[in-house]
Image 1 (cartoon, rainbow, N blue to C red):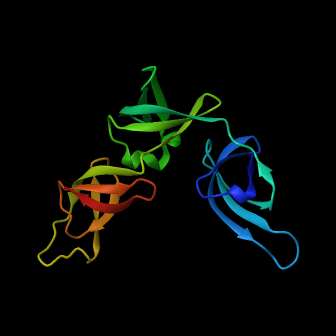
Image 2: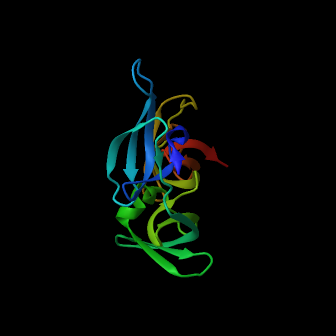
Image 3: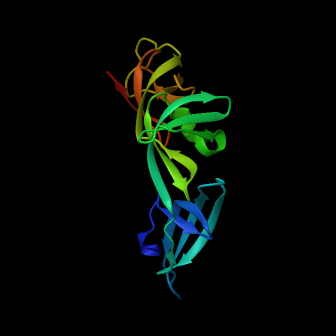
Length: 186
């Protein structure tokens, strides 16, 4: 069981029989009455977001989540195929369960696959991914590191904002949680 004092962004809880992840939370202490916690929760199975208020000290359950180390093998149409690193069985997930993570999936990269009651429900990518820039407008003379940004398409198909000095073929480090450029990799 988790108490509301343990709430933090990214915490996985069980609420109303489903696994949820806390997207946002705010602690409120009004002048009168007890403190409470306002939260925004995302259902890990359906993706539906709901806002709930919990009284201070209220308890919520821990979901029966398990993680397995898997390797992304390939994509076919709307199905993403992974191989379990221990049993070598192939697991297929549809695009809905992969979500926005598909923008940073690279073949042969190890990730964590989440299971709820032995049913795969989603993936967790490493925090950072190193990807090659597939398309980018050329930089102009005088572009600086502290200047503006431009859109660049990565090898996985994701489009992110990068500094003006980045060109096609450069390898960049991207934060997979936010989709933001971190740095150029040598």
